[in-house]
Amino acid sequence: MASQLFRKPVVLTALKVALVVGTILALINHGPALLALELSRQQILQIALTYLVPYCVSTYSSVVMLQNQQAKPRNPQT
Image (cartoon, rainbow, N blue to C red; front, side, top):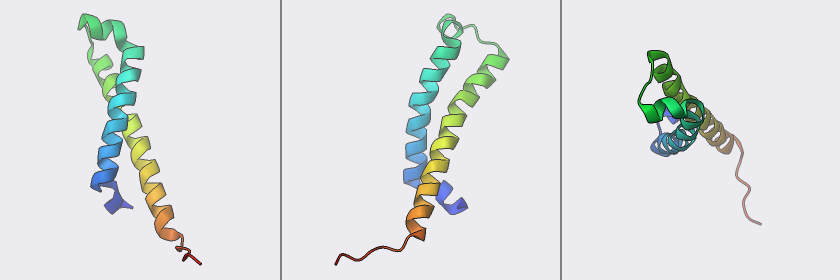
């Protein structure tokens, strides 16, 4: 599993998901503070976690999918 965490397609997909989902959630949760550029340390930490969570979820689902593909025997075309 660990080797699949750092595969380029897994990382790139997770980064894209984190960027989109994290940005949307950060704007929803901290929009006024972001626009005013008045962020506390706690808010900065919360925003960082807002990006980290979708990255981890996307990585986990990609790795599980890859493991499931490897575990299933391929059916030859008949």
